Structure formats: C-alpha cells, structure tokens
Length: 392
Image 1 (tube, rainbow, N blue to C red):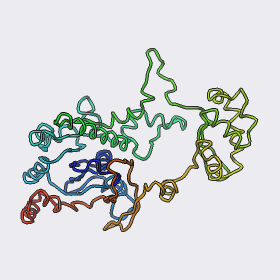
Image 2 (cartoon, helix red, strand yellow):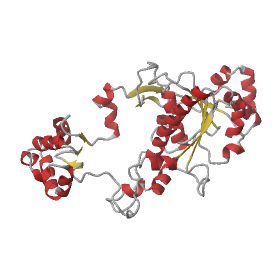
Image 3 (cartoon, one colour):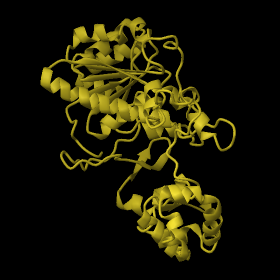
Image 4 (cartoon, rainbow, N blue to C red):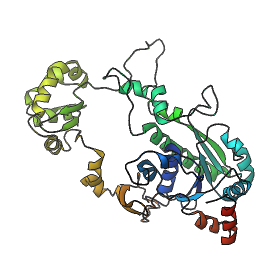
C-alpha cells in the first residue's frame, strides 16, 4: 500500500469490469477502506477468458487493496444491508447504465437522504444524457468512436485497437482524481455531491492535443505531435530500440555515439524541423549505424545522453532493475492461484506513507461475514440473511 492518506475513508465499490474497479483500487492504494460489493454471479471481469487457472488475470490486477462481499440488491433484505453500509460510507462508486441505479433503488437522491455527506460517483460509457446515454460502453467501443483506433492505424492504412484498455485505465485515474477532489470540497463545505464520469469524456481527454480545431482550419490536418521518423522504433543487430533527439544536445549526443559525428554540427540539421525535412537522407544512415549493436547495447550506451529504450515485453518488467529498485512489484499468496507477482503503488506519497503490504484481490464474498460483523450484525443475523439469499 503506497499511503494511508485516505485512512478512515470508506468506499463502497459496486462497479464491474475495469474502469470503475481500478478507480476504486487507486483509492485503496491511498489507504481508503474499499469494500467491493458484488452480486452472487460476481464482477463480470471474473468470467473473462484467462490463462490463469480459476481466475481472471485482469480481475486480479485491477482489484487489489479491497475487501469483498456479496449483496443481492434485488432482495429487500439485501437492499437494507446496503443502506446500512451507506449510512456510514464516504463514497459509492458504480458503473451501471443510466436508469439502472434508479430501478435498484440506489440512486443518488435516495442515498443522499440516508447520508447527506455521501460522494456518489457514477461512471458510464457516454454520460447521463444524449442519444447514446443508454448504450453499453466498453474501452474498444470508445476507442473506435473517438478516433483513437483511426489514429493508431494510420500507418497501417486501417483502424487498429490500442490493446491494454487504455481508456478504461485513464478513466479510472480521472475517477480517483475526482473523488479526491470531492473529498477536499466536502472538508470545506460538509456536503456530499454527485460525480459524473464517462468513458467518452476520458477518451477525448486523453487526446487533448488532438482535440484542438482552429476556426477555418481544414478537416484533414496532422493532429499528432510528431517530430519525424527519426524519433521512433528502429531495428538493431538484435531487437529494436526506440529513440528520439528533440533537442540539439540530444541530437549531438546521438550523432557522436552512433559514429555519425559529421552530422552533429551540420547547420542543415540543427533543428528538429530541419531534421524532419531531411529525414529521407538521415534515416538510412541512422538505421545503418544502429545495426552495428544490439538494442540492449545501444540502450546502455545511450544511457542518459539520448532518450531511448530497448523494446521489451511486459514479462521483462517483473525483474527489470529499475522496477525492482522502485518496489513496483509485490508478491501475493492466493488460495486458488498460489503465489503470484503483481504491480503495486502507482504513486508514492511522503505524507502518510504506509508500510502495510498490498491486499490481494478478494475472492467472491470472501469478507462478507467480517464486514457485516463490523456493522453490528450477529452471526445468527448473517446466517439468516444468507438463508434469504440476501448476502453470500
């Protein structure tokens, strides 16, 4: 756990898939007590195909630092249990489509009556209004809608998906940011509020550089920040390396280290714009020079002199010396998976720094009894709720 900054804050996480759950996880990373509330069928991400035996890799990765319980909100008894938690909670997060929370009787107006200081965060695909408000929203749907797929596939000549659920994870970061901002606002005013986040807003926000259109500007213009083909991934003697030299100092270092010293101070190439204009003659020379060493050898040679990185797989990150030194990976024991490694602590904060270890992702309903007992329910009452299928 990176911090206990939000220690004392209780988050009820009703969300499923990736964006909502990981947003709640980020709050858990800051020390909040995040209670993941699932139906008896569980978070849909649990059921996604995975090469892990008995569990989804994406679910495990997106749901650390939470306690898990099962409540059937479609039963009167389950709903009353949820209301009981809401009365002393600080944050509720869900990603139901517009109208679903109303049908479940857990809309903001209803919960705010129980707890006026509640922060109620709803994450939807397209927002609460408009012609697409009721449509199902998923990461790749928003990539295709918002221009990300089109831009990603520009060189290939056909649209391509950016794998890794980038819209989901960016939405999670914005959600956590909004909740932290709302907590600060509540400190000043004593009032709760409703937070409306959407994948659509996130998909466009992460393209803020592209989302600028000057008056009278043509439709088809270059909207990406590109310094030319010299900045990019290049083949080497073994493997590929990414490099860029946006400043003159970096350009001089690149030329000297690759044996192209004659280009370093040539006035024809002394700016990024000039180098881009001359890339047809520069690119073959650079690529020829790069073929004399492996990608890892170039990375070590460039070091801090040229912005660069050998192209690696995600598996290489688990034991990368920088990742190890920064303690970004931690080890967990899982009742079904056994031992596994996963990332931790996306940010570090000096104030409220915590040495508590990460909590692994919970099993379905793993902490139901523990949580309900802290809210004053006896073992007999919990058993009665189970018999009514209100909890699990």
